[in-house]
Length: 536
Image (cartoon, rainbow, N blue to C red; front, side, top):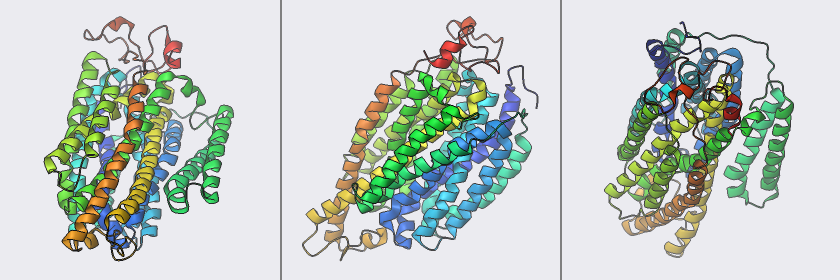
């Protein structure tokens, strides 16, 4: 497969590569949407509704901690091999998840699955950065939106179907044939040149970041909610995680091949965009995981119906993501997409916080559509923005950093939302239920089936307790997304790089656009690459 002088491929060649990438991304995207709808059923069957957030947090913890490693190692060894290894790890974790006999086995298996999932997303996006100029990436954003949209629409429906029919285990078993297909397609489609170079792997830095992320998330998801936020064990994990984070920075400053080069943080675009992604990730993952709880527990929907009920969110994400990509390609402008996306998400969270037992579905659907529209204006745009602001040699690590901070936010968001829901649910149950009836006694809140079988009056009180708790949970994310919107206003709009020698009449001052040669920042202005690289 022959690339041009900048290393970019032709449109026909890009489509071949995209075919391989989209299969792998479909695998990871389907898992994100197919599991959420069935989680209430899974945790009911395994007897651990209180550990619902852990099934997601374990996945995100492993994916988050491993994402920078996938990106860095792929910079050294090439994307194709690492992408295929990620597929194999993901499928192995999926099979183990489907065979789990209790909630703890499922949590461990989901962590293995997360190791592979972290590589699938980061490596696919990094490969796009290798073969497509920043200015042209918007036109291909529609393909990714189609992949995510299809997976996101099918996921909740399939998740509900399997949970109601053959068994929730098939939610994970279905990844085996999909993974095999992904391996076959990537073997034939991903034929990319990779120039090997001398390298060293930063094992010490890798150990420090994995240990730091794990410690902080264990405090947030386990020690804090279960042992108490001021418990010695929890505080030890928190302090240990922060100390390890500082140690990681010190190690990276001295490392020959750092996992995340600290010089990238001197680039204001890189720093602000990743902070934005972290905050949006909190709201995104937290809300998407617990919306099925509202639909199935409060509204009384079956898993299949709740999956169909979430389609408006996917439609919102798809439409704005596609539109944003087309506008970026035509105009070269992107600055206002992230703050507008944050504004949409804030409005959606406020709407979600107004949902109650008697709320009509059309209002919930509208809130979900607005939420999805906000995400569509943010997610892929931030990836392009960061890739455009760094050197071509840093595409892999920069892209994986975007995924890392977003997933880190998602892991915190899931743990935070889970802790809020559990805490507030106990409070509201105590307020609403008759004396002598409690969540640990005559009322079983660990099972959606058990809640449905309660006497109508008692079931209504439990649903009201869940509704109030979920409302407070959604409101918690509002100030975080508001802060993200403010940060987004400070993202500098650099010209989107094009192919060398190309002229685009629609782009202002096209003669000043980056030539995007392999040794210069993808979005830098000719003659001023250092300024663009530093983000100043």
